[in-house]
Length: 125
Image (tube, rainbow, N blue to C red; front, side, top):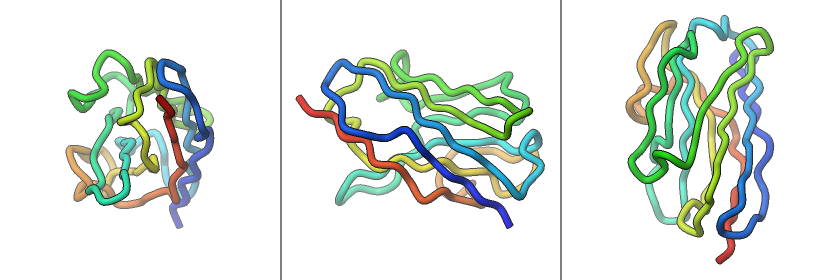
């Protein structure tokens, strides 16, 4: 059974940085594309960014490009989301997700096969 557990959320001020972590178990982690999604109240869940199984390639939503980075440590089964220059509009619950299958894609929520419970990020102005 796949388990994804996020941590690192909190309340910060605009312009601050925050690093989210996601611990994965129950899957051969190094074979799965991992993604970070966020969902604000009243909004749909949106893809923030994703990282391929090898870590060699990442992609990001236009709204976070240049501010957020994703990395992974396949030896520790961990994926990270580094968020810099945070804005109030980044306020949301952030979820990590694993692709549906090994070596899968992560272009939208429909590509995710497993989800974490989420961690709240609140950015005050």
